[in-house]
Length: 567
Image (cartoon, rainbow, N blue to C red):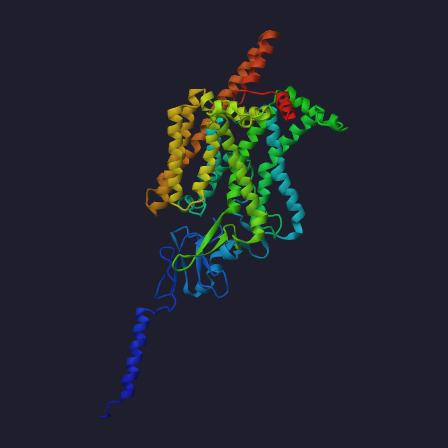
């Protein structure tokens, strides 16, 4: 019998340790855990990242940082709430998150070579793009965006449509917010609601109500035309600047028409232009049709307001980059992650103009609130300096276009309705579920105010607004529930209810328009059968009360232009 060899024992022990290690799994020396946002499996070294979060390095030798990712930029797991990142990709997390959407860079905010940001995509989708066809793309962009906006301008002028009225107020607010702040597609930080439940059918469902509602945001074809880019070097921030021009285009046109009317009157101390006769026919047609330019200007301010707020918020928004202890290491621009929020060029070219726009947008509701609430009228009349607080003639006409449908002691509600949009954007910039909670906190007091004060001259419109605002509150509750349910079997039923609620305001405005157009048609028939005197009388009455959307007070263009000339 051979003596026991100690070397055999050592070999057996080593093999045992290896087998145990294989069975129990190996451990990772550096396995990061960022609370509930990013977790690590200590045995396999695989990572679990919360949906629509970004993780990666902002410097070559830096540690992993995490933050929120813009909707559509980062990979999204439709079958769960976390993204599984295999251990062989832990050193290239950014590549794993961005490649599937043809993106790269910090926060997946840049497009890969050969791709460019789509000009007509809400989430700046990266599509195949080259500089060779940039001229053709620009022509296509102008024809598909600015030409339809010009058509909308002509339609509003031709049919004398008034949007700052009781029947349209709450509907326009709903249409503008359901495609932005109350969207069922995603919130600011990308919690998508419909896609995981309805799958490929979610896009068709969204388009069915987003296309008509987007008209109220002067966004006509973004959900219809296929995504296309202008040039491959156009950044998302540059696209937002172009969208400023889109939103302001009708306002610029109406201001040009007002200037031409003023120019035509020769009130300026310069010689009238020789080309004015080409414009006289157009301007006379506008006057002959009884169009109120003050009403048209107010209508386009209302339609542009929500979109200008959205663009300004997008340009200013930044997100914190967190380390493993969730301490803020730096702040990055949300839609252009390669830029620090403190970058000087970003501040001058994008952030500062956006802040100026926001200040102007805040001043408008303050002005609408200020003039009806001059409760210090006695003090004002005694002071020559404070008398300047009163509106001039031209401003008074513009204010009346916003406030004419409200009772005299409730005219400040026009300012409250614009402020409502700003408050919703403040809630929209917060993370969920705080966003949904703030939306409900904002909407419910408005419902109570309308119920208690009944601001409209026509009592029916008070109930219309309360119903539409209640609809918005229910949609916020549903979005909150769906996000918190996390796979509950009742989610699909709840979302079907939400879609029905989305269509109710559209059904209301279609019914109202059909009824009102029918009544206008019957009025025309009666006018044809009446005497010449009665026809003229009824026509004047119809001009005063409007046809498509009746308004309270209509100021003539001559009065409005004269008021401008006096200043």
